[in-house]
Length: 255
Ligand code: COA
Picture 1 (cartoon, rainbow, N blue to C red):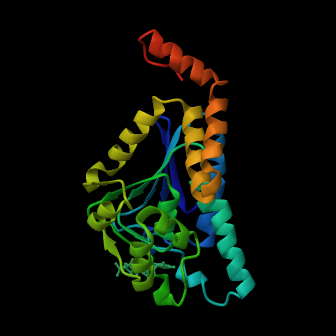
Picture 2: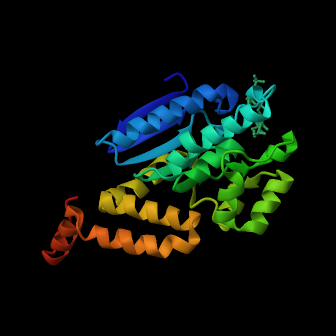
Picture 3: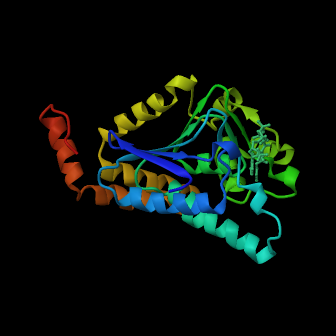
């Protein structure tokens, strides 16, 4: 992989986008590699969770690579957006294991969209987040118009999208766009500590919970029915038997 480093340690895949001289901007090669990497991490039984971060100390990801924008036809632009949605952003959004964005600096445009596709966001104090596409004559194309309002509400989302302004980590935290703010040196440790807690829980239940939460957001009228179905199926799993047995035997479950 040219544009990434990958480390697997303590059941966790650390995926680092590695184009620091270009603020880790997402060019097509980087997105293709990320899509492949996600497929591998999904199958890898050693991996129980993923942390995505950016190389260097300035940027998580400063957006899609603007140098690749010129000269696209309407059809090519549609294909670029649709491919990015399906193969990368939705893959992360629906990933069956928890994925945390470790936001180590600028998270702009496609970078914020990538972070919003993750299940949880942890940011450093210096991070700046924004969707500046309107200043390029564009709108967000990797899910920003849908995921930002879902996280922070329509009014704040429209203000961010229509001004294109960046917000501080503090504002992002107050609005619920990031879950935690930490000092730079604690960023990865904080992400790992969240994942480690999840690793003590049933992996099948985590996958089901991610699925039902996402399903309900996409299909609000059908969310409760899906919850009932998936809840009842959980009764058939070995994880359920182990979880209940462990509680009754006053021991920790071994999932
Ligand atoms: N696409 C392509 N290249 C990018 C990029 C992007 N989204 N963001 C930054 N870069 C490149 C710059 O062109 C520059 O490359 P160069 O050294 O070859 O000229 C390099 O990364 C460093 O960026 P620079 O602008 O010099 O750093 P800075 O510290 O002055 O500013 C930012 C940092 C993030 C504020 C600024 O780079 C920026 O506004 N980037 C674009 C953000 C954006 O609009 N993203 C949405 C895209 S849809």
